[in-house]
Amino acid sequence: MSYAFVYTSDALKEIEECLSSDRFSTYVHLANGDKQYAINLYLKNMNFSESLFSILHVVEVVLRNKIHNHFKSKEGEFWYQSNNDFLQESEQMALRETLKDCSKRNQLKSGDIIAGLRFGFWTALFGRKYEELWRHELRCIFQTDNRPLMRKQISVMLQDLRKLRNRIAHHECILKMNLLEQYKNSVQLISWLSPVMASWIQENNRFKGLIKE
Image (cartoon, rainbow, N blue to C red):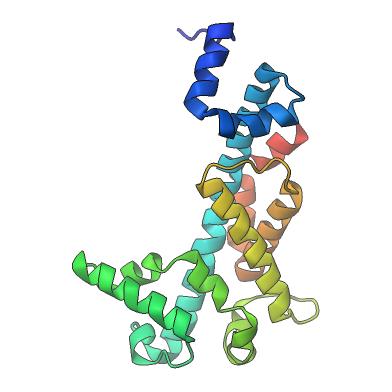
């Protein structure tokens, strides 16, 4: 049997202490000092974070696998070791650290390495310093019937989504962000990479239901 939670003064005090006054103050400010409403905003923030994180999960996984499959088809399963001269020093360093960490855990399958590379590694490949990589390699992993996509367009979208992902990962407030735009950009990126995956995640994600509230 479930019971409705009662927001007594003691319960409100306990929640604030557990969340910390510094963290909770953000929501109290948004709620114009109403602490019970601030808790409701905190819950909304958690629900939005949960729904958007699943979308960001798909963006990251699909993006890195599309890139991996592209290079694998040209250079083989372990392209990141056999031919990685196109990587800049920061990405070379990230790759070396990932290979080292996976080696310690005896996880040397290509899938382990690809999954071990952080989102920042993959988004960096669309930065200005990788313009030639975009023109000759990465542009082809995106599918669009409209005008050709620009690297900068993809880069800006990915950097914005990375900021959102980091805020969610650190349990920070995202209510002031344009969440609907972030959702649309996420779905758009996925659709350019895989229309099937875009349709699937929209069908199985509850963000649109939350935003309607």
